[in-house]
Amino acid sequence: MELQIITPNGSERHEATAVFLPGAAGAFEVLRGHAPLISTLVAGDIRWRGKDGVESSRPIASGAVMIENDIIKVCAE
Image (tube, rainbow, N blue to C red; front, side, top):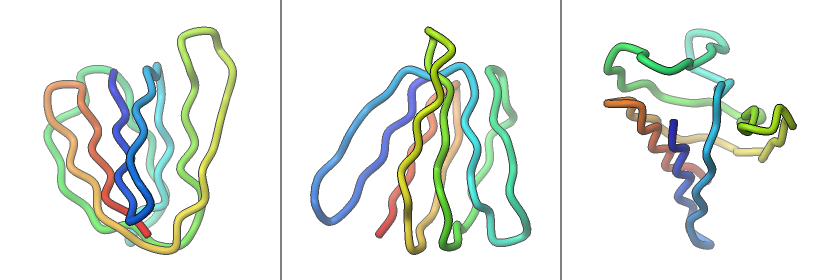
C-alpha cells in the first residue's frame, strides 16, 4: 500500500503493509484491500509498518483521510 501524508510543511510517501490512524470515532487499522473510506482524524499518531516490518510514526493535530485502491491519502496539520 502507499501512504501519502500531506501537511502545510510538505508531503511524504511511504510503502506500508499496515497503517494505524487516529479516527474521530476511534483509532483504526488499514490493511491491503481495505474498502474505500473517508474519515476525519483527531490529534494522535499516524503509525505504519513498512515492508521490512519496522514501525514508524508521525504526530498530527487533526486531519482527514481518504482510502481507495490501496492508496491512503492523509491531509493533516
